[in-house]
Length: 168
Image 1 (tube, rainbow, N blue to C red):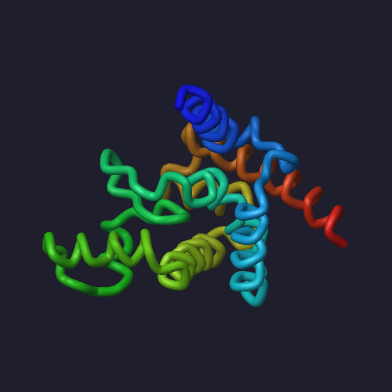
Image 2 (image 1 turned 90 degrees about the horizontal axis):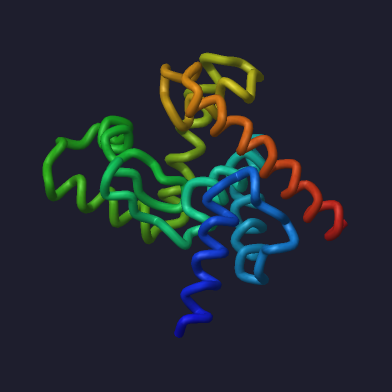
């Protein structure tokens, strides 16, 4: 049991902190999920961004709930943003329903993350540093936290491209 707990802690700190993410740490299940994300997001030219966000935000689905910030799912979508995007009444029932969809429905979670990135892409064009920072912090994208987040996403993408190079 102690060994299992230590392994979980290592995985958490490896994935939760983008600067420590290494492609060689990926499991077979991680690679399968990354492939699924890539296939879904390629037509939007967002594959690497979404894969990196899934690594950074939820450790590839290991941590899909953040009750402190009200972020849920593979990409840690903020429930308030999702409620507004889907134009549903902000009620306890709808918040719970949307949170469960973000946690359990890959397509719903992924389409919301794509919508969020497309929104920021319309504002910032191809300035990916600003897009990634805004995914994390909205219009507060020049904060030190948002800038660090953006740099972490960039580092994760570099590692993910190494995996792709090995599989080519």
